[in-house]
Length: 417
Ligand code: RNT
Ligand code: ZN
Image 1 (tube, protein in one colour):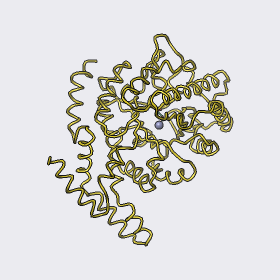
Image 2 (cartoon, rainbow, N blue to C red):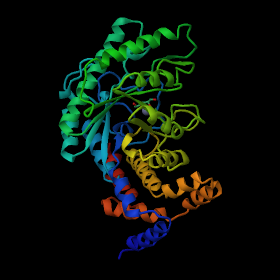
Image 3 (cartoon, helix red, strand yellow):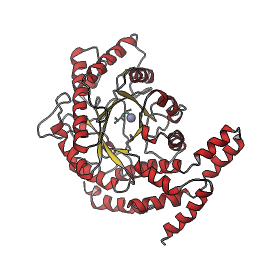
Image 4 (cartoon, rainbow, N blue to C red):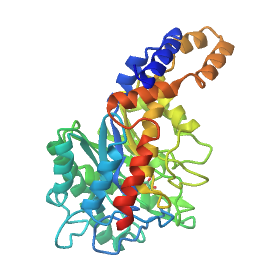
């Protein structure tokens, strides 16, 4: 028996004493698809011809060497990062990751411009998710789907329509559903006099984009709200109430909760049992806000664990689409992927190691002291031994072994860029 197996055998016994089956937890954690965002690898720049400046009130900070500059580099870096992450994976890309020999504007994109991504994913047997890019473009400076300028508005509506066609193509090519998330930066630095008009236009634009029906098993449309952004501090057209109302009034549209898109004390973990009463599924953008929507690398913090605890307690792991959304340009980007994605999978496994029935029983019987004591004891159970065993079983590096590999990749590949 290896040391990892020995430690696991002891941990397994301890969890069994609480009624938790560690083998079943590992199997369940492994099955949950986790969508890995490509944009950590190149600071959300993409492969278009116009500028490559990140706008829309989202920002990367730092200038760590080794950023991926081409599709080939980005996919190679992702291959590296994916090799560190156990479990079922998807890759999440944005429309600005288009590939073409001649310039293609956002209202001209077609499936053929994303064929390399589709072939790459299909070869690995993993799914692809997609996002319209409604920022970092000369026509997005003032507003996009909520614009009062009809030419601008219809430009972005066309973009949204094409994004759905490409999503359907991804689903076809990979054989897995494609989650299509829509986020727009529209808003105002100061509080506008007319707050209703832009929302009316956004609603109309979304309806136009959604007009064509797609198989719900293939294209999963989601809309993402935000409380404020840089440059839209006072007013955001697509706020929480807007998209919540939109999604609740349409059968085929889901809401996206980004963990950085609410007031700092407002927790996404506390919203899940509400939204799941009304919608079959929900998309989560797992991020880490530090004082604002800063998109720091996801750590194994209280909120990440609370989100996964909630999903497990509701038996709702199959009712959530989990996607990562952070972009740190100040550290090794492959390490950033590894840390955030491994932490997210870790938190899923950790949540599955709770004695949910036992906790619920104590709660139902009014034994709130027992509930507290057991929940606290769980925090020092030998979770690490179960995680290590899972990684070994899944064929990904155990412990910090992956960090050494990432350092070697930095030495041999990234530092030469
Ligand atoms: C922005 C949103 C959005 C983006 C990505 C790049 O605040 O969170 O999801 O981060 O689409
Ligand atoms: Zn997001």
